[in-house]
Structures are given as C-alpha cells and as structure tokens.
Amino acid sequence: MKDCALSIIWQYGARSVRVVVPESLLMKGETLLRAEELEASGRKQATAGPEPNQAATDKQPPSDSTSGHGAENGLPLGTPLGRIVSKYIDCMKTRRTHHGFIADLSYLRGIFGPVCAELERKRTNARRGKVKLGQELREPHIEATRLEEVTTSQIADFIRESVQRYGLQSKTANRYREVLHRLFSWAMDEGGVRMPGEVNPVDKVKRYKESAPQIRFLSLEQIDQQFEVLKDHLVLRGLVAVYIYAGLRREEALWLTLEDIDLNAGKHGIIRIQAKTVNGESWESKTKVNRVVPISSALRTFLDRYERPAVASPWYFPSPKGVRWHTDNFSKTLRRINRAAGFPWSSLTFRHTFGTLLAAKGESLYKISTLMGNSPDICRRHYATLTPEALTQSVEFDERVKGSVAVEK
Image 1 (cartoon, one colour):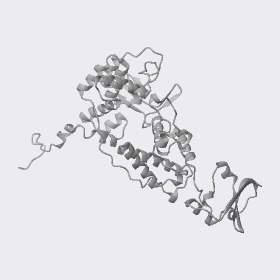
Image 2 (image 1 turned 45 degrees about the vertical axis):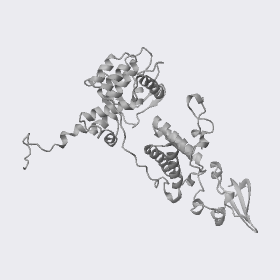
Image 3 (image 1 turned 90 degrees about the horizontal axis):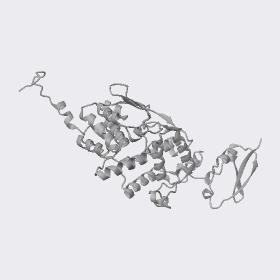
C-alpha cells in the first residue's frame, strides 16, 4: 500500500539521506524541516509523488541537520501561530460568555496582531473612532511564527512595553497575562501543542501589583438628583432605578424581558437574572449563574410608576426603536444627559451604590455577593472598607453598661 508523500533528499558530498513526509502531515500543512536549518555544505531537493512506506529510521533526517527542542525530542518543529490561535478562538465561542469572548478577542488582537482572520480589524468610517490604516504596525506585538517559539521573556517584554507606551493600569497588564495563560494552557491540554519543557511560558511572568480599587458611589442626595434629571426619560429612569436598588450589571438590566420581572412574587416582587434565548440571540450572565434579586420597596415605587412604551417587544426596558438597547448606545445616551447636568458617574457607579448601601446597613459580604452575583472576595475588596462607621459597635469591648462583661479596674 502506497501513500502520497513528499520525498526530501539531503546531499552531503557523496552522502545522501532521503526523508519521506507522511500524507497526514501534508494534509495538515506542517513543515517538517526548514531550509535554514541545513548545514551550509548540504543542499535540498524535493519532489512530490507516491513514495513507499519506509522504516522509521529511514524517515529521520541527519541529527546535525535540525535544531530546536522539537527535533531533539522527536516532537513536531512547531505549530503555526495563526492556526492555533484561530482554533482557540473557535473554542472560546462555546465556552465564554459573549461579553467575555469579545473582551478576550480584543486582548488577543493586541497581543499578536492580525495573525488570523478572526483577529483582523474591521475597517470602518474613521469618524466613528475606529481603526486607522496601518495601526497594527505601530502597536507592540509578540512576534512569532510558531506558538512554541513564544518565550517567557517575550511575554514579559510585551506587557512591560504596553504598560510604558499606553500607561496601562496594573489590572489591565495582569489581564494580558491571564488571557495568554489561558491560551497556552488550552493549547497544551487540548490543542496538541507540546511546549519546551512541557511548561506554560506565562507561569514565570510575574503579576503586577494592583492598587486598592477606587469605588465611586452616590450619596442619598445624589441619588435624588439623578432621578430628577431623568424625570422626562422614563425608560432610562427605570433602568437607573434597577441599577441603584437591585445592583444589576449593565447588560443584565438591558436583557430583562417581561417574564423576568414578577411583581406578584415575594413581598414587593422579584427580578430573575437568567440565561435566555430571544429572537435567535442567546445570553447569560457574566458568571454563568442564574440568580434572583428581591425588589425593594424603593424600587417597587419606581416600577409602579414606570410606563412601558407601547411597542411589540419582549424587552422590559426597550430602546427608542422598540428593540433591545445596545450597551454602548445606552451608555452614550445616559452619559450625554448626565454630562449636561454635570454628573460624572455611570451605570457601574449605580451598581457600586447598591453594594455600598447594603454594606452601610451592616449586611454580610456573603449576602451582598449573592445579591450582586459576585464572589465574597470581590465584595470584600470593593465594599469592606467603604463604610467603617458600620463597624463602630463591633470594636466596643466595654460592656459594663450591659453588665455582661466584668471589667477590672
């Protein structure tokens, strides 16, 4: 039985060695050996056609004609960077939320540039603030043709140069590191890639020290001012009320349907944050966990006054066109109104206001994290130090007034 293969012959004076590349490698488009890896005294001749199967020893090139970890260990010489990144992106589509997928896509584009079709920038009108021609050439990228060529030093240098050039925050720098670590972990575990030493090159890249988060939230007076500015914008006013009094993320509120808000359940009603498919579009929360948020009396007041536009739409808070708000369009509309009033805050500020109000009441971080769909650790970093007055009574040890503790004089 004969296979279609590529026959490669190296000649070193009177000595010649024939190497047969199997059909399986040809179908994958792999390059077994590179011309630059040959000795100066050798020359290569290649012909395509049917070749008989040969013993494994006959298929190996001279030991001095190859270089790199792949040849020495009997491994493939490398995986084309664009191909493996493309496969990883295809896999991410099924595992990441839409928001997380789009964010990671942006980071990968910044790291490698347009190495595959998925990372090519879409050319749009420059007036819309999109990409200018040739921008990729001015940005720092990790330069490599094979994934196995990427080193720890390259990754560290890329992140450091990006921080210096663009003034990135430590959190963003660490985000680059996390995105790369996931890529290499997937490539090694599922992509069939064997990195030098079987080690993820990102492991030894040190994380940047992140400063304490600066959380902005509204006072009760500022909350009243915000609602006053939105009194003529009923849909926006309802959305802001949901952000402030229920702590929903921006997308979570924009994806609320008529079935998600039940005013007859519980004391004042409930809001269901749940995965859904509407008009062929699928969505799930950032954490991929469904949750229920009780409606407070304050929020119920706004919902009772809310007059939903008379449109044939499944959305509880439809856009002016009767469709679901696009997140950017919503933010731009709200920002334009608030800037005119001199307000610098955004929907994230409203969400932090909800967490802060709960912390000020003395609610546990576990309850706050459950209501907001966060981990207790994130809530601790965000809200534990915002309202120290709520802990005042907790540090009082003199219980003589209550008579429960004997204090020695």
